[in-house]
Amino acid sequence: MQQLKHLIAAVECGNLLRAADECNISQSGLSRSIGALEDRLGVQLLLRKPKGVEPTVFGLAVLPHARIVMNELARCADEIRSIQAGEVGEVNFGVTQNYSYYFIPQILADLNTSYPGIRISVKSGGYLDLIADLKVGSIDFVFGLLGQIDDDPDIVIERLREHHSRVVARTSHPLAQRQGEIMPEQLAAARWATLTSEGFQRSFIGYFFSRGLNAPVQVVKTDSMPLIQQSIASTDLLAVLPPDVALREIDSGELVFLDCEAPAEQTDIGIVTRQLGFATRHRNDLLARIRKHFGH
Image: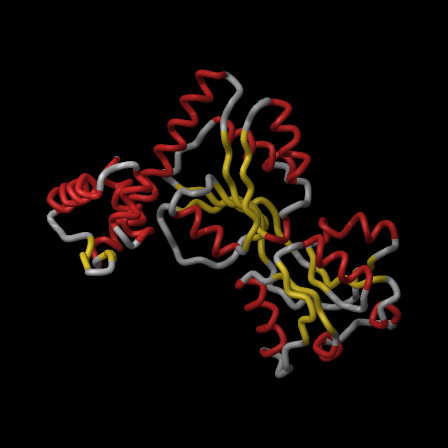
C-alpha cells in the first residue's frame, strides 16, 4: 500500500523531493519504494528527469488502479471505525446539478439523526465529472439525472424514474402571456439561464442546431440551481428545470411552466455505483432512503 501511496504522490507532485516531504519519508526512501514497485511489476513507472518526474505509459495505466485501492482502503478503515464506535461513519457521494438541493438536504438531516457524528461529503457537478470521480473511488455513488456513458462492467446504473424537464419563466415573462404552444424559434430568440454541465450544454445547443436554429444567448451559466431560479424569478430569462425542483415556486405563482417542448434530452433519474465498490452500511442506508423517496 505504501508503494502505491508513494507512486501517487510522486506523480501528483511531479518531484520526488516534494513527494517525499508530503509522505514524511526521505527522498531516497521514496525512490527505493517506487523502485521496488517497478521491480515487482517488471516495468518502469516513472521517467526521472533533471527537473522532476513524470509517469510512463505503464505508470499512467497503474495510477487509476492505485487511487482506487487507496480510496477503497480508506472506506474499509472508516467502516471498521464505524462498527467500533457504533455511530461514527462517512459517506461521500455526488449529486448532479439538477438535484443538488431538492429533497437531498432533508434525507441527509434524517441520516444525521440516525447516526449522530456521521460525516457526509456531497459533491455537486456534471454527470460525466461525477462518473469520473466514481470510477477512481473518490465518491461512493452518484445520484441524479443519468447521462450517456460508455459501457463499463464496473459501473452499475439503477434507474428510479423517468425525468421530463420543463421550460420555466417568471409569471410576467412575455412568453408566459402568449396563447397556444410556444415554438422553437421563439425559444431561440429568448435569453436563458443554464447549467454548465457538459451533458446539458450538448443537449441544449443540439436541440436548436438540429432544427436549423442558432443557439440562444445564455446570459447566466452556472452550476448553482438556486442561482438559476433566482435569475428567472427576477428577470425575463428562461430556464430548463426538473418539475420537482420548481414546484414550490410554481404553486406560489412566482414561476410558470411554459407550453413548449423543453430543449433538453429526456432521461431518467437514477443511482450509479461501482460493481466492486466497498459498500458501508451508511452508504446502503442513504441509498435505501433515496430509493424509498422514489417508491422503490
